[in-house]
Image (cartoon, rainbow, N blue to C red):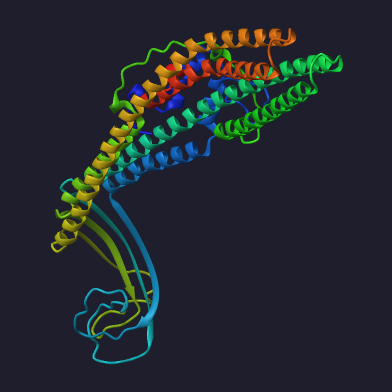
Length: 465
């Protein structure tokens, strides 16, 4: 998380949903994975935001990026190195120079003019304190890069939360629609069973031909098959919902609540800048620009202030001097204070090459942001079209259902009086079954359109309220 308090619309979705859930009187804890208590849509969304693995991953990565800011700030701290060394080595020494390397051990002292393989003890101890006093903004640029990367990670986490919450809500509506289809299919089977029994009685009394009974039995068998298929779809939808809330295989008992009624269809104006996908795109662009600013200062010199206290001990004796001792303990002290200026002159070539790479990365991120804006605009148009169609259908299905009921009732009456064939009755019953299914799911269609509009706007809080 960023150290600064984010704006309300920039907060994670689960934080923004908590006031709504509190107003609705939901329990404070998330829905338990193994519970079979009633589950509302808000419960499903909250459970998904808490349990879904993808959200846990994004939040962990966002926290890791946030902690990276602290890592970058540690560059402002001084460095303190402590050393103690004991060794036993020969005392041979030569004049000359060696380039910096890590293979040949250095040796100090005058050239003795002799060569011997005798060895003596040596010791060394020291403390070196170094601090980069002046860096011309390089460390600050590194902290800015870490902040930009943290903001990008949090934006991605918010986008993942929106996607997971929307998927959970959509799966919830899918289960309810599947259950409505099961109810309509079951009612159709019961109606077909009653009609088949009446046809059987007429055939047994030789008032109708045996073909009518065969047709009625066939329609009943088809209705039962459709019921079995509807139950299968509902069970699969429940499994998908369990997975969407991060509780795969858990028993679910859904509560419709306000989803049983038609909602208000007012849709707020869309602001692309507040959508998590747009914010994630902007954060990615800012992260690239921060790296560019850091590279612009990477060629600047560094001024490091250093101070050291050290001691040396050796068991080697030098003619004309006092005996140095055993060498197991440092007995010759030294101190030093100084400053070092470091200027990587030839790094300009690699730095310029890396800046060209980041420039192309910025162009790529800008293009992806433009694609995101286009996609969001297209999704907004689709959501509005879906909303209009869903509202029109919801207004028309009651008329469809009533007309289908009247047609089925009249067809059965005409058949009972010998004025219609069983084919006419079968067609009317199929029409009634379809009308009942349409009427059952039409309200959920409006809710689904509202969900699509809320997802396009990047905030499910008004929808969940």
